[in-house]
Image 1 (spheres, rainbow, N blue to C red):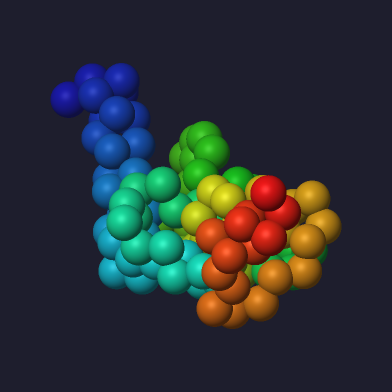
Image 2 (cartoon, rainbow, N blue to C red; image 1 turned 120 degrees about the horizontal axis):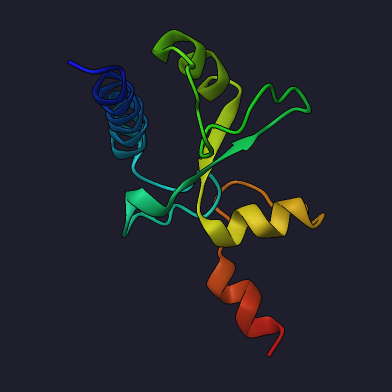
Length: 103
């Protein structure tokens, strides 16, 4: 196995681990969106981010990735964007009702 093949296998293994984790949770922490676990994103619940779990993982080991995942909640892209621009949302948040109120 070449070094390139080894790196590709490692990258695939790390992505498979993350996707398996997303599938096991299966829904947004806030609004419970559960139609497509692949689009869920990791949101750091405190300001203690070491790296972006959804980004390039380089040579990060699975235990290192798991430590970072433990600092996060899974959220849908809509809730993630709202949180990041400063909205305070709570568990069982209904994004569709919230959007209807603003139209």
